[in-house]
Image 1 (cartoon, rainbow, N blue to C red):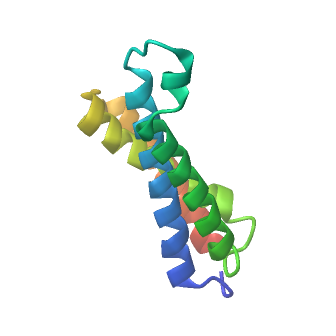
Image 2 (cartoon, rainbow, N blue to C red; image 1 turned 60 degrees about the vertical axis):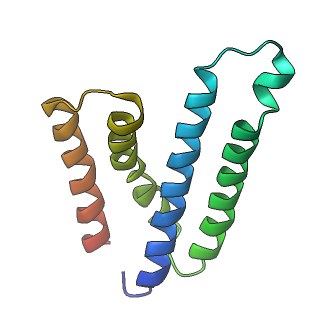
Image 3 (cartoon, rainbow, N blue to C red; image 1 turned 30 degrees about the vertical axis):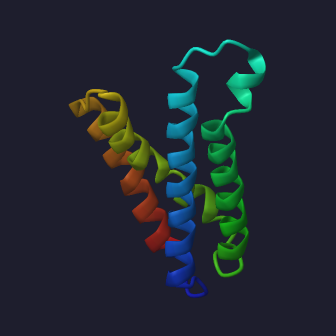
Length: 117
């Protein structure tokens, strides 16, 4: 972890957040009915969501300049935290003790790998 830049770490986690937001937009778009296949895929919400995915990928490329390649997938697991919060907030999903325990294990693994790596 000596060669990790903490600003780049924050940039990478921000990209994960953008990707999670784009997934929320795609799910919201998928929950609606469309009168044609073209409107289902070529509407502003879906196009914006894919643009966010693209932006998150570009941000990842910048962040990987100072983050080891082995750390990237570990940090990507933080998306589970975002999706738990977004699922409850945007879709009314229940946050159960089992989900919180699983999330704690994931986050614990991230912290352990980051500190030990």
